[in-house]
Amino acid sequence: MKILKIFLILSSLLLVLNADEDKHKYKHSYKNLDYLDLTNEQAKAIKKALVELKKDYEDFYEYKEKQEDILEDIIKADNFDEELYYKTIMDLKTKATKLEVKRIKKIHEVLDEKQKEEFADYLEEWEIE
Image 1 (cartoon, rainbow, N blue to C red):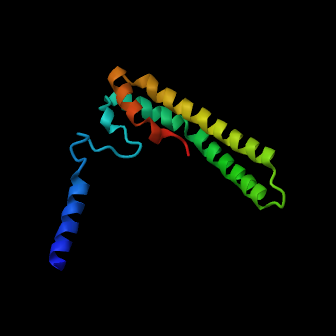
Image 2: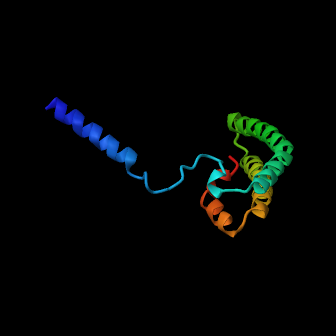
Image 3: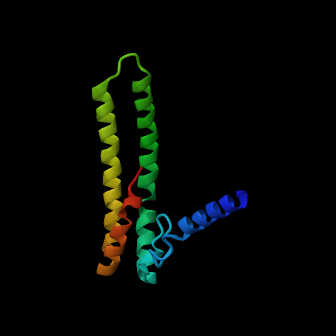
Protein backbone atom coordinates (compact mmCIF):
# COMPACT_ATOMS: atom_id res chain seq x y z
CA MET A 1 0.00 0.00 0.00
CA LYS A 2 2.86 2.38 0.83
CA ILE A 3 4.44 1.71 -2.53
CA LEU A 4 1.18 2.53 -4.28
CA LYS A 5 0.88 5.84 -2.38
CA ILE A 6 4.46 6.79 -3.23
CA PHE A 7 3.87 5.88 -6.87
CA LEU A 8 0.70 8.01 -7.01
CA ILE A 9 2.43 11.00 -5.41
CA LEU A 10 5.39 10.76 -7.78
CA SER A 11 3.10 10.36 -10.78
CA SER A 12 1.05 13.37 -9.75
CA LEU A 13 4.15 15.43 -9.24
CA LEU A 14 5.49 14.44 -12.64
CA LEU A 15 2.20 15.36 -14.31
CA VAL A 16 2.09 18.75 -12.59
CA LEU A 17 5.67 19.58 -13.52
CA ASN A 18 5.10 18.73 -17.18
CA ALA A 19 1.59 20.16 -17.43
CA ASP A 20 2.43 23.41 -19.20
CA GLU A 21 5.51 22.19 -21.04
CA ASP A 22 3.93 22.82 -24.43
CA LYS A 23 2.30 26.07 -23.36
CA HIS A 24 5.25 28.18 -24.50
CA LYS A 25 7.58 27.09 -27.25
CA TYR A 26 10.35 29.26 -25.78
CA LYS A 27 11.48 29.02 -22.20
CA HIS A 28 11.36 32.58 -20.95
CA SER A 29 13.52 33.80 -18.14
CA TYR A 30 13.20 36.92 -16.04
CA LYS A 31 14.09 40.13 -17.89
CA ASN A 32 15.55 38.19 -20.77
CA LEU A 33 14.78 39.53 -24.24
CA ASP A 34 15.93 36.45 -26.18
CA TYR A 35 12.32 35.51 -26.90
CA LEU A 36 12.10 38.63 -29.12
CA ASP A 37 14.68 37.35 -31.60
CA LEU A 38 16.45 40.71 -31.68
CA THR A 39 18.86 41.55 -34.48
CA ASN A 40 22.41 42.41 -33.47
CA GLU A 41 21.68 46.08 -34.07
CA GLN A 42 18.57 45.96 -31.89
CA ALA A 43 20.40 44.14 -29.10
CA LYS A 44 23.21 46.70 -29.16
CA ALA A 45 20.75 49.60 -29.16
CA ILE A 46 18.83 48.20 -26.18
CA LYS A 47 22.02 47.42 -24.28
CA LYS A 48 23.27 50.96 -24.90
CA ALA A 49 19.96 52.42 -23.73
CA LEU A 50 19.97 50.34 -20.55
CA VAL A 51 23.58 51.26 -19.81
CA GLU A 52 22.65 54.94 -20.22
CA LEU A 53 19.98 54.44 -17.56
CA LYS A 54 22.37 52.75 -15.11
CA LYS A 55 23.15 55.99 -13.24
CA ASP A 56 19.43 56.77 -12.99
CA TYR A 57 18.86 53.35 -11.44
CA GLU A 58 21.70 53.78 -8.97
CA ASP A 59 20.28 57.16 -7.94
CA PHE A 60 16.78 55.72 -7.67
CA TYR A 61 17.78 52.79 -5.46
CA GLU A 62 19.78 55.09 -3.21
CA TYR A 63 16.75 57.38 -2.97
CA LYS A 64 14.48 54.38 -2.36
CA GLU A 65 16.64 53.23 0.54
CA LYS A 66 16.41 56.67 2.16
CA GLN A 67 12.66 56.78 1.66
CA GLU A 68 12.27 53.33 3.19
CA ASP A 69 14.20 54.57 6.24
CA ILE A 70 11.73 57.46 6.51
CA LEU A 71 8.83 55.02 6.26
CA GLU A 72 10.33 52.89 9.03
CA ASP A 73 10.70 55.97 11.22
CA ILE A 74 7.06 56.88 10.60
CA ILE A 75 5.97 53.38 11.61
CA LYS A 76 8.16 53.40 14.75
CA ALA A 77 6.91 56.80 15.90
CA ASP A 78 4.34 57.05 18.67
CA ASN A 79 1.95 58.92 16.39
CA PHE A 80 1.47 57.65 12.86
CA ASP A 81 1.81 60.56 10.41
CA GLU A 82 -0.59 59.44 7.74
CA GLU A 83 0.05 62.45 5.51
CA LEU A 84 3.84 62.06 5.55
CA TYR A 85 3.56 58.31 4.97
CA TYR A 86 1.24 58.88 2.00
CA LYS A 87 3.47 61.61 0.55
CA THR A 88 6.60 59.47 0.92
CA ILE A 89 5.00 56.41 -0.69
CA MET A 90 3.51 58.41 -3.55
CA ASP A 91 6.80 60.19 -4.24
CA LEU A 92 8.66 56.88 -4.30
CA LYS A 93 6.11 55.28 -6.63
CA THR A 94 6.13 58.34 -8.90
CA LYS A 95 9.91 58.25 -9.28
CA ALA A 96 9.84 54.50 -9.92
CA THR A 97 7.13 54.90 -12.55
CA LYS A 98 9.00 57.69 -14.33
CA LEU A 99 12.14 55.55 -14.49
CA GLU A 100 10.12 52.57 -15.73
CA VAL A 101 8.54 54.69 -18.47
CA LYS A 102 11.97 55.89 -19.61
CA ARG A 103 13.26 52.33 -19.83
CA ILE A 104 10.20 50.91 -21.57
CA LYS A 105 10.19 53.78 -24.06
CA LYS A 106 13.85 53.17 -24.97
CA ILE A 107 13.19 49.47 -25.54
CA HIS A 108 9.94 50.16 -27.41
CA GLU A 109 11.70 52.48 -29.88
CA VAL A 110 13.95 49.63 -31.03
CA LEU A 111 11.33 46.88 -31.51
CA ASP A 112 9.29 46.06 -34.58
CA GLU A 113 5.52 45.48 -34.40
CA LYS A 114 5.70 41.72 -33.76
CA GLN A 115 8.37 42.19 -31.08
CA LYS A 116 6.26 44.88 -29.38
CA GLU A 117 3.39 42.40 -29.08
CA GLU A 118 5.69 39.76 -27.57
CA PHE A 119 7.27 42.32 -25.24
CA ALA A 120 3.82 43.38 -24.04
CA ASP A 121 3.15 39.80 -22.87
CA TYR A 122 6.06 40.06 -20.39
CA LEU A 123 5.72 43.73 -19.48
CA GLU A 124 4.82 43.02 -15.88
CA GLU A 125 8.27 41.72 -15.03
CA TRP A 126 9.86 45.01 -16.07
CA GLU A 127 8.08 46.95 -13.36
CA ILE A 128 10.34 48.50 -10.77
CA GLU A 129 9.79 47.12 -7.29
